Length: 416
Image (cartoon, rainbow, N blue to C red; front, side):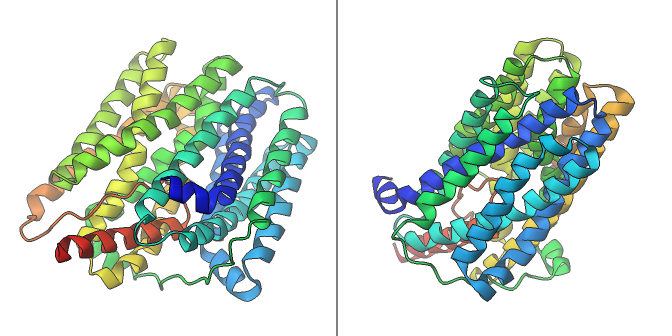
């Protein structure tokens, strides 16, 4: 762990500041939208736009890097992010915000691809798993720290938007000034979606559903907090609980999944998240219940992302794992785009607590399908590979790195 920090501290510091800025703007927009009088559905369109831009960026950023290089892409996208963050309060209109969110999603996707390429280049076969773990912890710490900043300013003013812009601007300094060499960039050609779906129906269906769950958490949790009448401090704690749960439950669930039929783990974890969502739907007027629900939902949905990647890899040849990563991210992205839209419509139609209804439906649907798939395919001759922590907000590079870690661990086990 110390070796990873010593070799990549500048990159990790920059990514932490970047996640603080990104986490702050996501929650801040949800709160500010309520103050501006935007409807829940208008805010759902704004939040959905981020994931549409992110998905587009994940497809185009690799080609941009190949054409002009990491540093130029990194610096250009950073400038756009910083500018858009300042412009949000100046153009307080749902259409302007949706355009800004789409653009900022595109830019963050490219930034993540670039930064994670550097991280992967600084890791080797002996510490790649640790590098992924440290990277995930840094991301979570940044997002949770952002929620604390939210309570220190006035969401109706400009200051918090300026702080977010400054943090993003500063975040690039340690990365661009680092002595780390620019890595060679190469990603695998995506596997055809039809082939991927036939190879792992549960992996593909689960990734689509999780896209909706994650985007509801990341995009609509603050919108829910405003609609439910929570204070700024309560919204901050509520959103933080999601990511604290994701961090603390990632490793126990991963350890368990390496020792038990992975489909059973997927079923149990999804059922836990779905059940807690139902509890929150019924008792959302108790703030303590909301915090426990946020912790459990975040602590189940985020590990499920890594579980489904690992499960899909179990049925792939080593040469196909990196290629499959692109397809899984695309499927997850399509679910993420639709998640806020469905959530916003449900909240407008059935009330604020429908936020949890949507998550419950998605998680319990995954539970049921995992149970069904267990009756359709045996695990005879299939050995579960290594679990590697990956967040749904990560780029294609991190998912490919997780696949590389999977392959390397399997080869080590075979040689021992």
